Amino acid sequence: MKSALECQDRRVSHSPDARPASRPALDRETRRNSMAMIKAVRIHRFGGPEVLSLDEVPMPQPRDDEVTLKVCAASVNPVDYRTREGSVGGDLPVTLGRDVSGVVELCGTRAHTLKKGDPMYAMLGNDRGGNAEYVVVKATEAAAKPERLSHVEAAAVPLAGTTAWQGLFDHGDLKSGQRVLIHGGAGGVGHLAIQFAKAAGAFVVTTVAAEDFDFVRELGADQAVDYKNQRFEDEVEDIDMVFDLVAGDTQDRSWSVLKPGGILVSTVSEPSAEQARLHQARGVSYLAEPNAAQLARISRLIDAGKVTPFVQATYPLEEVAKAEERLEREHTRGKIVLQVAA
Image (spheres, rainbow, N blue to C red):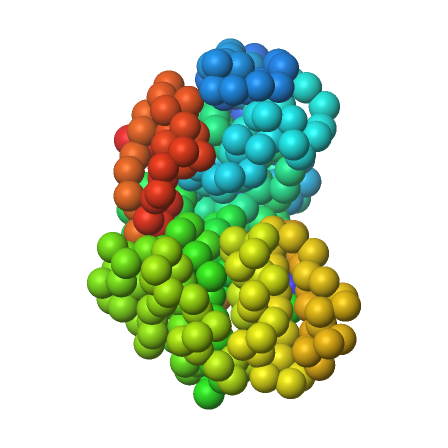
């Protein structure tokens, strides 16, 4: 089976009577692209927003079944400011940004079914950053952009959507008819998790601020609990799965609402093995991984009208520091997105 990112460059003919002149033209274009410079947001030291630098770097070149994507939009995630602060680690300098939406610009040597201009979106591995004008995308990371979405809307999906999907289904094994409690349902991962769980036929409870009640109910939540003024353990019970996006005291108190045999899944901290035993439950933590097949399934849900990402604000690439500060310091709904190109 061919890779989802195999692409076709129609400027090159592979027929026996192909004109020899086409090869020098392609070589000239390849050399020109390899010499081109692009803008990318990088850090050269760890710290606050002031360490963000808009640098000129060489245009990335695809290999094998990779493509170089012209980035139209990229979203901002907590992992960005944690990386910037040094909490995540890694070598410097590093380009930030883990998810993008854009169009194919260049194709690797083993790519055959896509063409320049095809719209794609992707969750990137942590060895590259999407806060740039161009980025190399691997076959295992990308899917066709949902037709219903603009690039700005699509950029809000890959990391948050993949995180929600893997937490609910790969680790939580959520099924139709089960009851799930999602902590932090108004955020980037949470607002997509509510919609995925409802599409799967689950009964969805979520903890949010009171001002977000209408928002999460529009997403499909069956019950909302005000985490500031209510104790969720007094409001809910018989939960099959807790999806923890908050950690701390919220996670500690979540064991009591689980059914025997239930599961607590967290993408922010390791659940207590002792508490799991005491409550005859299971606990698991995970880090989301790029998965092109899952992203394609999410695209189908979006194009079917069952899932819609919410973008609270957009910023130009040059104002990435403002975007990160807002995400880190303010209560936000859905996602914040950087608009890189028209």
